[in-house]
Image (cartoon, rainbow over all chains, first blue to last red; front, side):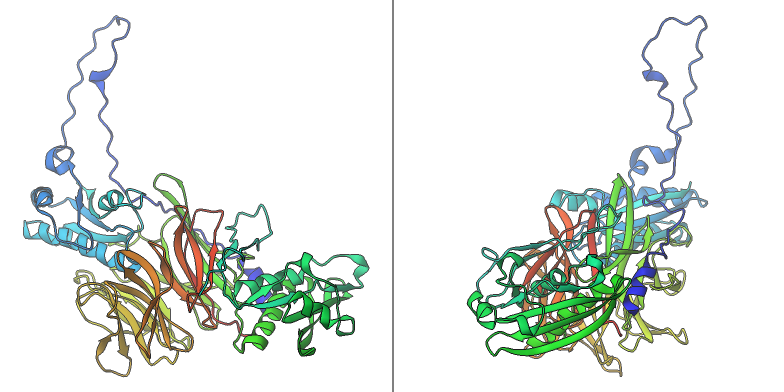
Length: 174
Length: 447
């Protein structure tokens, strides 16, 4: 029987996508050593030089440290409370022409998967558009949508949903 | 309609292979139909073969297949009053007393090492007549398929419609091993959940599997190359099941998704959000000619257009669009003509599928805040909600139009379920592995 041969063959072509990770690429930043918080130990014989404070990256403080913009259900307009964050990143991009970001659009689990990929892209595009209006260059900004596929919170209630309807700003070059 | 779940709760473990690193699907019939045909399926006799038992108990497979349709109520083996294997041994009045409307007997005759001649007969108990009878040669490894063929012969003889036991389903499993790490596996299994085979695995998302009309290929969306492309998005692939050969069909700069085959297998309808770098994102429907590789735009509306599906005659497309605000189903005549909205009940309607006879449209409907599977009768324009979940999605018609398989949430996990097109028969298909989603029922396999 043809069907059986087909089924038997199916066990062979297992294809693995190589070199992929399920988490979006995050800029890995060497965390500053917590020198100040080391507990006092037995007295040492040599005096320790106080560590010079690492040069603070402006992206790690204030509004620029905020990288997530949340949205209302089925909406893609940027809410008032997040406009300052978007503007701050736009200003940074404008001041650092070599910097590049990817904006990831995400949705909650309600609605169909492919529709949500469209909605996530609208969210990412809305952030991109506001940034370019604020002086960032369009070529500094990529957008991508993962729809409902990469939730932050795994619950099935408004609390989880509200944390999943988001745009995430990821610096690929600083 | 009265639920039979109280007195008819068949929990049938259909997949007996153990220890395999496969998602085991187990089908539970949670709601049957009043008036299902009582049918007695007698264990098949065995002749020859030095007493070696065949690997498949034919009567069990046939009973499960028929029970799953909701149209039949097979008797438990222990209730059978006799064990005839051919017409000469059948005492019809015994089966009438038992309450069986129909009777199936058969035998397997060993014809050599690992080969059998399988004979079966279907009787009308009241008329005491044979309704169907066949002898089928089979190899040991084909026995399950022969059992499914017998189920389909019985189903068609008694209902007048083709059976779908000898078909397959494609589906995805997602296993989260640790925070942020997932494993996506695209499977194809027999329609009863047996014999799951991995088609493809990835650490990144796979979506929207779609069968070619000849059952030889799956089209799907994979995020596997997201790191390669500047904009890092999904591409559409077609995958030949017998060889594992894959082709990347669409990898335009934006999203490439929601593939659906034309009935003649020459064209793939799909969604592309950006044709060129720097284009504004606009999810539109395109047709990709698989022979000359031409791409033709079908829609241009600035809204999100997605989930195209061909009508069985290939003359029109249905698709989702939110051009009127929320997603609704639209119809486009491929010989030109305007795009006409066809759903008006429900806040949202999305991901349409068309029944094989072209008369009904299955879809996901927003039913007062819950996402459920509904069927629209194209003639009466009546929309019937078939399921009662909160997040039911991904409907797919059986090739005989009798059932819709879909994804639902049960015990906080995503599992597959099936519902008859009239909403009267319901099955749940739990799995022992992760979440199961995106089911697609195969077409009839050409023999």
